[in-house]
Length: 426
Image (cartoon, rainbow, N blue to C red; front, top):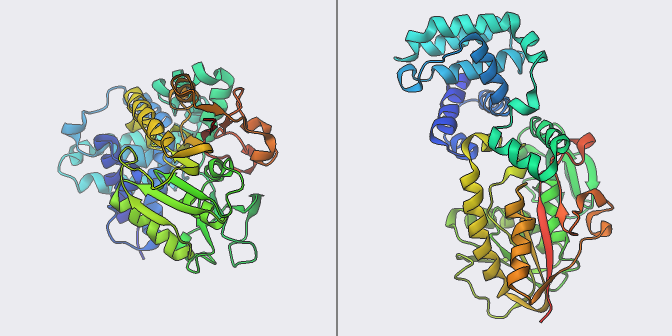
């Protein structure tokens, strides 16, 4: 039986990849060494919870050691402390197990071994005092870096920012979209339409109906932009920046004839795999959308633009720690080019839905305001409560879709999405 040390070593390495090299967590997790499913799951839990609570964890360690050792000199000492603190105070691992494992990890590293007494002392102190210290912390503020807190406070106000930050700290449930009612699928809560929420899913590929292609994974909020296109049965739809394919499958299942455009070959292959598993068909095109020109303009175009993804921190807890305001600026500039390219694909009288999974105004509402000011062929078509299953709180003052992580709070929250529906009037 595994003692969990391999899982802890893997978690330590993944934290180093994410925090030092600023690699996305999904990419770092792909580098997990072969291990038992239980150990792989434990490593993922350690990493995910450490990143969600990193601000609190850093503050706890600084309380014990005001001046932490420099990473280059200390090797993975900080990562061992981060993960050990997480185990003790947020995963409720017995102190003797968490402290002993941390000491063994330090002993095995040529640099960290010199800081083994420090690691031992800090973790033993936190095992005694940590819960009391946590009770006095402002968790939402500590776990939200200054650059994000200030931006959200300006956009949403202090109270809403705090609620958003609190919602981002909890692991998200798993949402799936049913291809059709009546097919085998896991039991869960039906949120709306064919979106089902699972609270304790386990391995996705082992759930009922996965192999048969009866459903796919897609956050509830991510299903809403395609919904804004309306009835697409028998209609041509161009899905731009289509990976990983949730919206493509959603549109095809709704009867649309979909052209899915994605510039990265690996991501396009993932769409193809998802379509094959679900037995759905779409035309796949590998292209940068700025270079893509359809044979004829389409009555429906969906652009889910690359963005800072700050609305998905529940699922990607590394984002606050590996991104910065400059990433928002770069995404904002790129999206402006993409939306201009997308407009050339919309037939007169057709609809363009622009979406981003970002909470940042520059990437959402401000992007659309600038676009409408420079392209008078398009006009906003306001989102109605009927469009979003009777949830007027998901509609912004401008009439656009604006979901927040704190929405559906009692059911486990949802991703933050912005989407605007635009009609080509001439």
